[in-house]
Length: 226
Length: 232
Image 1 (cartoon, chains in turn yellow, green):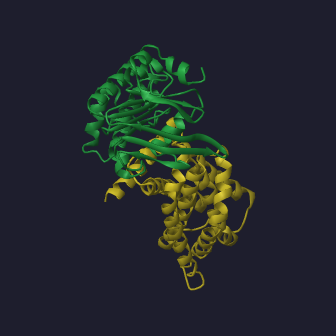
Image 2 (spheres, chains in turn purple, cyan):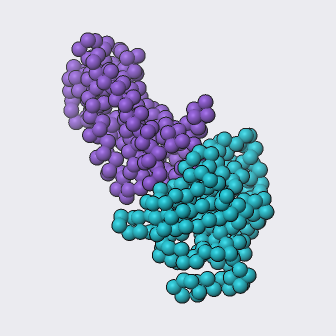
Image 3 (cartoon, chains in turn orange, purple):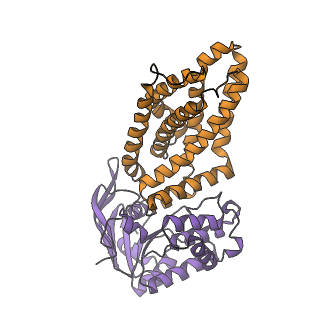
């Protein structure tokens, strides 16, 4: 119970700070929307082709926009040495990490939902046909992005070129999760539910989330205390 | 039992030993002033004592336990170079956040009390980014003292403080010492530090060059320790 409360305190602090400054969310949302709009103007494709490329396009946009957002996660603690005060507080590193990941998750999901709405309008794709299943895939895929981005944000926080290093480090790790999310979303965008041909990707995505969450929780204390 | 015990601590940055076999103790209720030139290793040592960094060799005990233990951290107050408060939150939000993280009862009430102690009650809802430097420093002092720690670790606490903030900090440190709190502070402001210190340790190139009680002649002539034991 105490752990849950500590997680919520950290998450609420991060969300409040981000909502006030809008530093990361503005950059991330603007990037996602501009890419979607530019590609819709650059390739005048028919609706069938749009549905075919939708999942790959969306997940790449989510991954790129996500790194812009996740980069700020621990970097926002650097001014005034706030990270020291958090590390000094009597809370486990895992509570700090999960709290930050939770705040990032909420922000990234908000950007993804906004991107989906814009995508539906500009690409003329009805993405709401399998709404429930799409939300499940979105939730699982976003957690994979968030957990990797948050732990690597902690790892690179003191590196001068962290904006460059974060994407270089996380994309190779994210390949299995992105592949699973893209394969699962492909059918859903065509209006087909998850069937026997794609169902095997679901346990892979869930497994990725569980394994990397567990590994991150175990390692975060060593990452934070040098 | 010493409140703070530093036993044979070494710290390397690459191959360079920033700290070499540091052994220091601070008894409960004492005030140890860590002095030394820039780069002597004061901040590195304080960060290890606070549990932000691990020593290469040796160990640190705070009240008999390692500094990374959760219960130990509850007893440590750290005031570093940065003020460790969030610019985008208000004064009351900052202190309430830390009160919650330290598991204090009635966190908002506690935060209000400390805003009053530090003379910031009238700007409690103002965002920190709108504060003057002195107000920010007083808020940082409130943050460090909020959870009533028994061991205070202060890194250059008087640097860049305005007169009012220095007065607030000195009053709180005197009250803390009277209540039996232990203080370890690194400083360049010898006069302010030696007024409070019961013991002095001089660090020179990562080694302890002198450690002993603060004598009246040291307090009256702050350069004495450097002249006798330092590089001159």
